[in-house]
Image (cartoon, rainbow, N blue to C red; front, side, top):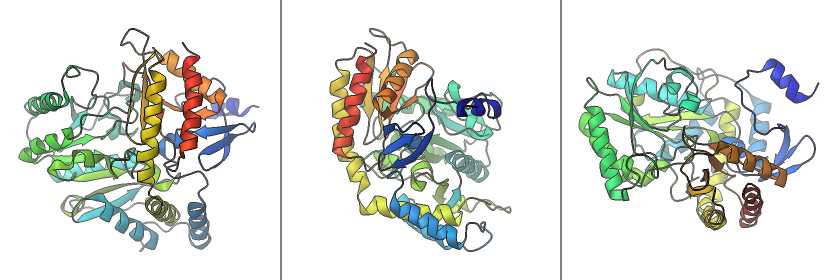
Length: 427
C-alpha cells in the first residue's frame, strides 16, 4: 500500500499534508533535502522554521549521539547538566532581568505554560491577544488564537480580548502612517481595556505573526503598548517561537524591535533552538516564574538529549553569526523577491525581515485572497526543486519563506529564480 494511503488510514483527517502528491522526505544536508524518489529540494521552509542552522549539522548530530550513548532520559527530578547549561545561556541572552527558564517540548506547551504563569501571578483569566494571531493547538492556546483557520472550538478556559495592530497593511488603520497607526492601536488597546472587568493578566503577541502570514506592526508598537500595560500591572508575553534566535536579522529576539520600554515579562521560544529536536521553553522574571506554589515537574521537557542538541546548536549559531547572515542574505533575498513580484500582478505585497519573508497573493486588481494561486505556486515551486510554506489570516493567502539561517547568497538566488518561474506560471 502506498505510504500516503497508509497515512490516510491511521492518522486524523485534519492532519494536513502539502502537495497534491505528498512527498516523503528521507534525508537532508545543509539547506537541501531529498524525497523517497531521489528528488533534491532547496528547503525554504525548514520544517516550519525549525531547522534553524542546517540539516544534519555535524555539531548537533554529534552532541545528540554522544548524549544518547550516555543517558537518554532522567526527568526534571534529578540534576541535569545539559539543561542547566542551556538555561544559563538562554537566560543571559533573553534580556530579562533575574531570568528563570522552564523547558517544554513544543511552542504550544511553552505558550500554555506562559498563560498558566500569567493567570496565576495576576489571579485573572483575562488575556489580551492580537487579531490574526496563532499560538498553538492546545485548548488554552487555541482560545487566544485570532485566526479562525486554526481555532476549531469557541470553548475556552480564558476570557480573551482581541486588539488591533499586528497587521500593518490591512484593517481600519492601514491607511495611516506608522506613527498614527501606532497611536490608533494604542487607543484601541485602551478602549479594549475599558471592556475588561478587573485586572487583565497579560498581553500575548508575536513580534512577527508566523501562521498569520509574516505580518508585523511598525517597530515600537509593543513598546508603546507596554507603557499602557505597566499602568495596569498587566504582563507582556512575547511569543518568540518563530522570531527568536536571530531569524529577523536586525535583532536576536523579535521583541527588541519594540524594546524602548524594556523587555517582556515572559518570553516563549521553541522551534529553531533544537534544530529539529523537540525543545520549547519559557523565560520569565523570577518573581513571575516562581509564583507557582504547587508541585510541578516536566517528564520530557529538558531531556538530556534535546538539551545537548540545543547547547550545540546555539553555540554554532553564535559562533558563526547566523543572525548577521540572516540580515545580509535575507536583505538581498527580500530585494530580489520585491523585484520579481513587481512583474507579477497576483502579488499584493512582499514583506518580512531577515530570513522571514512573506508573499501575499490576491486576485489581480483586488484585495481578495487567492488561495488557489498560492497552492499553484507551492506546487510549481516543488516541481522546480524548492519547498515553501503557506499561511495567512481569514482574508489573506501568503507564501512563507524561512530557510535555515546558514543560507548562502548563491542558494538565495537559486531559490528566487525557482520562485520567479513558479510565480510566472500562474500569470
